[in-house]
Image (tube, rainbow, N blue to C red; front, side, top):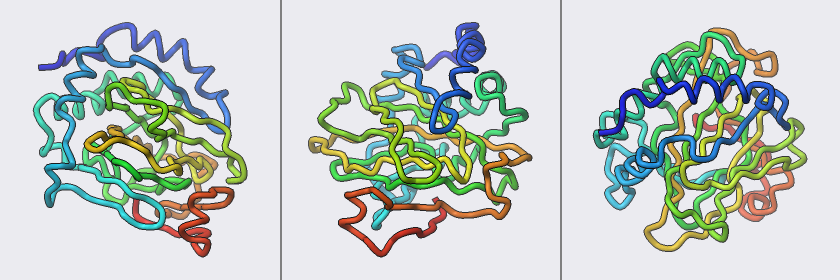
Length: 257
């Protein structure tokens, strides 16, 4: 069983303090990337227990449309033991304090439902067009403030693609690319202007999946760059050559996730 005290380690508190300025100053919006974030043995255990889409059942959700192709399992009660424990740890006091210190966002609340997130997976051809996330959690009645992504596919190769892209707030320019390397964690602030996605389809061998555990965090107060009216996910295909090929008429559409 993985160590229940992972985030009690002073390393994480010090990392948050040390990285705060870099986080808030990074462009196009506050974000940061940490390699080897988890102890290696923990990351390997989680990778081994990651849900396998070959065992796809009614508990999985699937997105398969002009804007996204991927699977995800939100219900943590369906995870194996260690992944379930991990899902609790990233909603724990210590991890929330780490996030608050790093991001400067106060009174962060976790989402035990992992709505729109949890264990996410896409195989060959999977993609997620550039978008701004839904901004309000109707069940929690809270505003979305940041995303935390844990990449859990061992030995990921550059030629498989799958890069996370961060775009300018006018949706006209790709600013940052981040490879989904194993045991890499990415955190970024979410507003109605934090456009991001994985628009280039993956090119993975059979039975290799881009696995990313996604956890989203909320507060009672919204960011000033978040629209006051709750909205679903907002997609944009401007300057996205792949998306233009599959749907020129989809300039902007909304979905729940």
